[in-house]
Image (cartoon, rainbow, N blue to C red; front, side, top):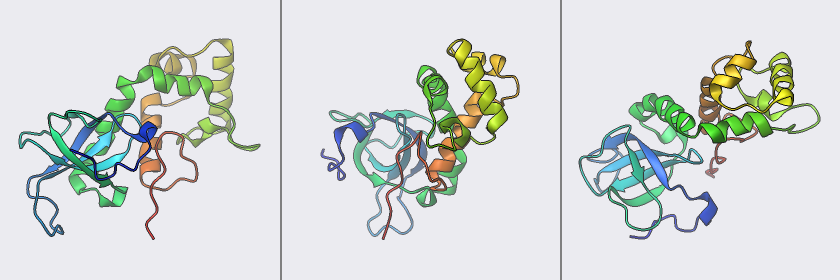
Amino acid sequence: MEDRDSGQRKENLEENAIVLDYLPTGRSTSIRPEPVVQILGADRFTLLEAVPKVPDIKVGETVYIGKGDRNKISVIKGRLQYNDLTEASKRELPNAVSEVIKSNEAKFVGLFNTASPINIRMHALELLPGVGKKHLTAILDARDEKNFESFEDIAKRVPLLQDPVKLLCDRVILELKGESRFYILTRPPQHRY
């Protein structure tokens, strides 16, 4: 089946997603009741709504949503804004984001190793909640000695820093809510006019 949002460029498509909520009869505002799932893309943290093929889909489950034969998802209906999520999806979102970050540890540790200034006054790492000038200096000094190898390595070598996974998770959720000027971890939200 063809996606309804097939106009997306290939590099922006998600391959896998985590189920945030399953609505067996769809949204209450839907004209035509059909089951839908709200999902979080496992690469660019894209919030999507899809129609499942099977009724036994579970919250927290990872499903394939890329091109080709999908075993649990029929159609991707489109992108969602944070405010379009159900309350159950909003509650599940931090767990799903944390799971994605932990399963792609090398990618996110790489962010700490390669992040650079955004402009003359701000560094990309300062966009992480709770990272100010002192934390930034400590991170940059530690990475100048040697690149970070894991989240545990970051926590050990930058003692004042909170849990790196939580910092990244908080930043992703902030970006998904659309409350940011800069988007370093997610796709910027689509504006509705």
